[in-house]
Image (cartoon, rainbow, N blue to C red; front, side, top):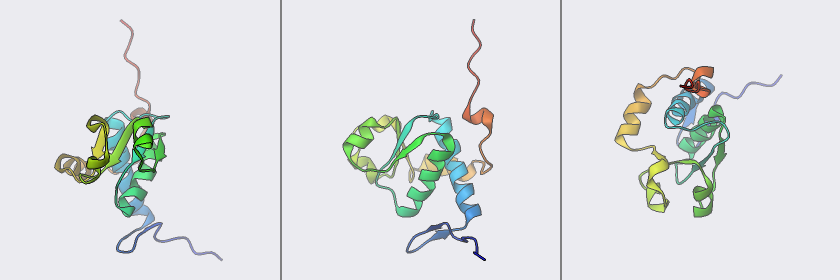
Length: 131
């Protein structure tokens, strides 16, 4: 009988259980949705540590967007949004559409955000009523 994978996110110096990966990616997905990421968008992951890249990729998928993990300017310029670090910002062209993981305000939002799964209402906000 196969034993379930206990650590789906493992790097040389860190590992997350399935529950931790789910919680972390739910928080990040919620932040992405609040910043305007929608199903069908392309989100670049640029210059992020390995564990953060794993979490970011799952978070992007949870929003219905498509992860783009290449680190070239072409990929980043075709993306609707991006996830990076302060060091990674040196490699980006457009500073207005990036979630910087190690920025203080991002960390505060992340640490105080809900880790519950995203709701349908969060993923598909109602359109404003016609006047």
